[in-house]
Image 1 (tube, rainbow, N blue to C red):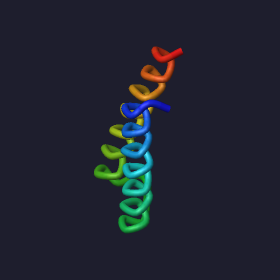
Image 2 (image 1 turned 90 degrees about the vertical axis):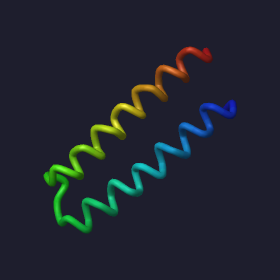
Image 3 (image 1 turned 135 degrees about the horizontal axis):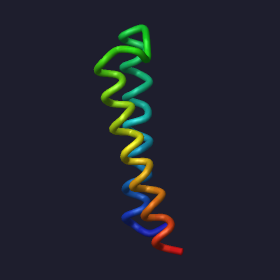
Length: 56
């Protein structure tokens, strides 16, 4: 895995952990802030998959 993919992977894992922690603190995944963070994670995942496909 090259440096860019590794960096993106680490950012995704950090955001995923933050998302779970926020959802636990709010007591739900339906909270507006949690949903916004979830959408941001989705966008990162799409970018990550595109980068992976471009490297093939």
